[in-house]
Length: 118
Image (cartoon, rainbow, N blue to C red; front, side, top):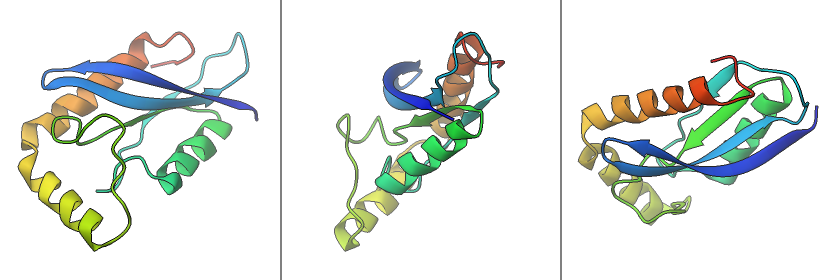
């Protein structure tokens, strides 16, 4: 299945959150939605490939930057000790409630997405 990839900004209670949306390219059809949270390194190559794979199987997939409150837009932490240290520090700095509000914001985005069944 052919897919498309786009970058969107999702409004959250803790500020704007960049996300990548992968979706089937079939016009006139609606697909179920998924939120794909990344590992501590944010939206890395393997996470993008997973989002694309899921979209290729018939889903609208939203992949948010999980540390949007803590890192500059577009930050991908490297797969090395410094990246692991930064990701592990970020996962404890981020308020626990903001993980939930980020997920809710992604789900709300999917509910209004014209090619998503919700």
